[in-house]
Length: 305
Image 1 (cartoon, helix red, strand yellow):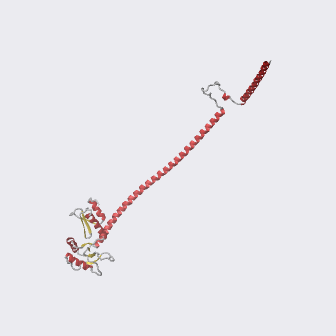
Image 2 (cartoon, one colour):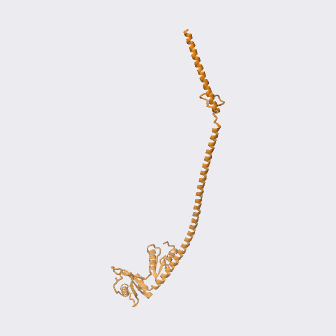
Image 3 (cartoon, helix red, strand yellow):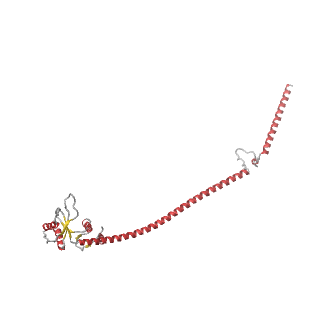
């Protein structure tokens, strides 16, 4: 009796559990159906089998049309934005390039103008240089002619210089000093009036002995030549030379430099205030009146200065 009662009670409990579980399952089914009705889950449906192993690829899922449209619109906007940005960038680059080209063109035009201007200036400078050279040549020629005229005026003048020239004194008679020195040192007795207008050259220096040279006139050309020749032959302790203007003196010094130091000419002397030079000793001399003529003589005889 006791066993039968237990069996019946167990069966009742089991039956209750089953009915409760069926009730729960029905509720779950109803909820699931309601979720399906409320949501679009068509993208989850597929013709492929619903079951697959872990080694099989997951079936492709098709996106909703709204998502596709949205992606296409985004892609289109990005593309348009990139195209616009790139076009703007190209436009700016072209503008900058055009500006550079314009600047280069301006520079080239300016350089061309400057080149033309430089060519014109160079031609003008060359023309001016030629004119200046011609003017200088004419000036030198004129200076030579002027100096020659001045030298002609001084053609009677001679200069006494050297250690034997007596020291200057107050109220001295320079005519007597020259005549006495010539008589004693050269043994030449000159007629009265042969020496005229003798005087010291330059200015006396304060505090120092007066050793200035003496300038004097000898109107007789033969006497002048005799006095100069006697000094060259006897070599006393003084010199008598023709008086030269400052220009002709510089010209003579240049000729002496060419003769003694550079050995470019062999003969160099002054006669009647005119410089005479020759390339070969004993050959015919050439009269030189200016530095220009001296340079022409050197060039004509193929002598490099």
